[in-house]
Image (cartoon, rainbow, N blue to C red; front, side):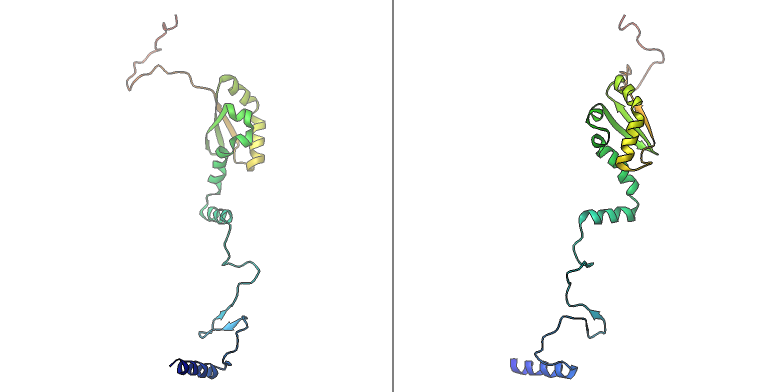
Length: 164
């Protein structure tokens, strides 16, 4: 039965013009449907090769229009690297909207220092992330304690004899 199947396969190959038992060369060949098919991948780059994850993520971010949001988010992720460890210890970025970065300082002295260093900080951020990511900085000092307790509040100046 196996010999009959082998003879039938050899006869079919001979009818198609193939020599029975001959090895294929691995070059371009026509399939039965007429489409060209390659027999091996080769040493060059190919679409079927695995792609690095970073390249795929960058391509997806570009196609989805996420580049601007990713660059803006990198201000927060790379803050200490961009402005330096000493400044990052006393200043924290809060928000970035329309090119304006809001930064909270740990004390009023550091808020004043950050205002004087504002140009240098904008230059460092532009060098690290590119121009026009951060165009302005709004620096806030620490907020004063509030005397409001609860949802209701009586208008007026509040308790003035507390420290007197």
